[in-house]
Length: 118
Image 1 (cartoon, one colour):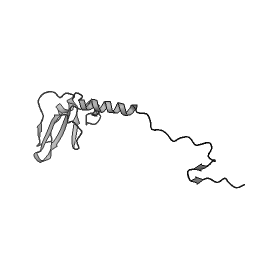
Image 2: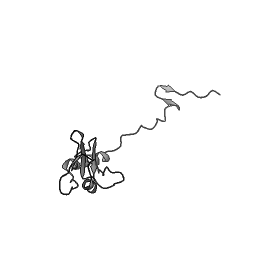
Image 3: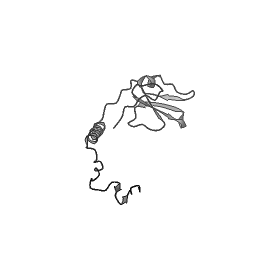
Image 4: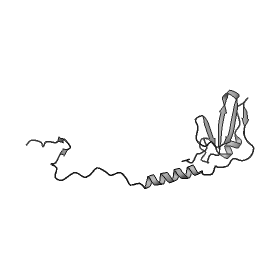
């Protein structure tokens, strides 16, 4: 299930709509649509930060014209949500049964606790 992905910029609570990737071999920074899953070495950005981003000196910045949009939920997201709801609705596994009152006190399985001598 896709969780809410926030902008990677420190202190920005806005939802991510774009992904920033650096191509070091070509000295290029690429800002594109939000990746389907979070990848290492990429950064999720909100619309404002995706528009205002500048590339390091000497680098090229590739960014599509137009606005970025928050992706709509997919059927995979809905299926994952339904699975999570089913899992939460399952009964809890049975706990250990209460001790049998006919067992002598202090006895557990094959071990016995001996009373303190008088």
